Length: 481
Image (cartoon, rainbow, N blue to C red; front, side):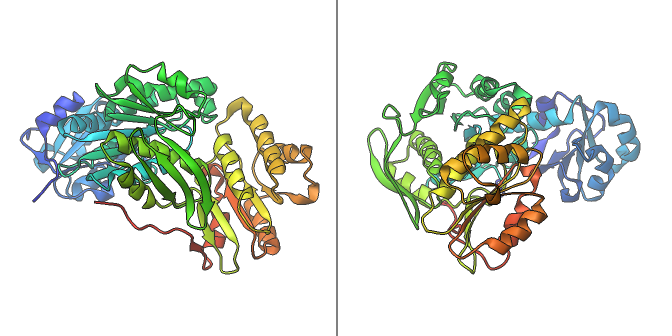
């Protein structure tokens, strides 16, 4: 039985407020795509203009691959019609903005389908929390979750457009780097449950300071479903402030004794991090595969979501037990010569860097604790101070050797030296320089944390260790249904 949605021209015009420019209004489509290479017979192709490519330049390719309809910008419609004449049988819809049209289609579908939506945002921990929530809810519900890094104004609608009649729940990660973005994503998603993991110094260039980050995340509340619930961090200083900004019910998670969803008896061993989960009427012991106490916060946010969806403590604990660390986000590998490599190369900000360093220096064993750090980007005028702070934290926490690369490497080194780290323990250079020296000094029993903002390409360093026979400490066992 086909569970997919069939899109008809009247629905498309209603959602996008576009104009039909062809004479086949009875056309219907099985899928909506933005990649001409992925277009197939029966698809509707939306021509998106991105940073590197303009989908309008690939309309002909999409049609050749079988697309039966296209959505284009009104200012490009004239030239498009000449390349895709009505005789070709292709339906053409013109809109003011194709990116907004994509979001409008996603919003339309979300309203048509009777699914619960969980939106997750925050300064750090979004992806890990998303995966944990999907693991928990997958124990009981047919769940669709954001894939990869599809958390922006193109990625979120693509995720929503993957919904079909078989889905009961959609777990949507929402990122942002400027004001208004979360508001637009929330308008598409209409969250029944809105999770804000924390507020920290990220994307400061786009929002003008940490208060601006909180304002941007609070945009989620503007479009939550009636009767929806905001899930907020009781351990974050902005948690109570955010609670005052929503008319929705609020459920707090955290280690704070006033939190609705809490953890006690936290400990770590070779299996991961273990704690007692405390729900309002129930408890269970949880083991999450991964290292780092920040994982407890992500797990509690996920447990709060499961609780709101009617799951008991044992179901939630089993779901959390099925979680595996996401690639590039505190993924731990052990090399053939017994070196632990923590691959946290996907991104970095001051809070996540501090938490990762604490995990590194808290690892058991007498080996060296080595930090390989790249720049943390999009911090605006506060960038130098934040990099000095990370250097200081590394020295205070007991990092044995510090490798640094990037524009702010000197400031990070200065912060480390200020807290007593010697020059011989600090290495500044390119990724290639670092890799050459690191390979020469690393020994069995050492632990190496590799982290930096995405644009720094730190995964090149991690990859050289991981590709040579390293094995992950925790592998994916899949989710529920």
